[in-house]
Image (cartoon, rainbow, N blue to C red; front, side, top):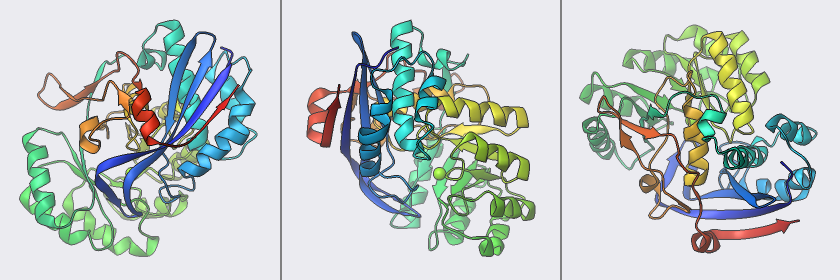
Length: 369
Ligand code: MG
């Protein structure tokens, strides 16, 4: 597949409610989308590192400029028969997984369109549906959170994830556990703590959580290994799991008992599949997360989530959860699985940006030919 043209769009997608985590608050999700054209076929990729470099060292303005100045020129007019070839062409540029993911994911979409094979099948999946979990950010008060969990439990979500940060921690967890003694919960700390907070996490053990997601620094696997040795609750790496090598080191060190895989954070679907395979070989289950992408990027997460070692319910949300109107069409919708729990089906067609909406939300764009 030869890449004849690349278009880049830095967009701001306004959220219905601000997204509050341990690292701050976003009123709009900043993402970069690329449209790659090969002959008469085109395909889209999306990367949503957010506006500020607070989730990871990357941010949307940075991804746009790295993609425009370095990555896109390295791919333009090149023959890219495999995604490994694409990754090899980008390998000279260090880091920047979000920027690379946008092109890697677009390559997979292009491959799917040209071959006529559904994306999840191309990735090696044999399932067509997976369960999804519910996920709640920091709220104004605990009563609001309990009401939100009430409706998630009524809707039969198999597990609930809670954001956890100083000031929204043990007291919140105690109230939640008291009200819902049997529901599966886990917390996501978004690297808001340090190893000196070990006593706090030892207290968390009593709440019988499925896991503690990314308690410590965004780039750490060593302190996480120490923490995992001293608590009973499984640790899950998210922010730290940026590439295959780091994940292999984490597996060796015993830094975690779960790995969250986001195609954006690991440099695209190619690397995400490799991480999935390494974890599977090590007996460590994975689950898929997203970055509040539009339906275009979310479809890549959904397709990935169909692989067999993604056994914990995914962080995949319907478009209507976050957006009055998704940038892309068709929007992502949930379905009901045979056991009555909410799930999502493998994308039948890959959602693409609606021209008018893309125009409205674009802050900066460029075309490379
Ligand atoms: Mg997380």
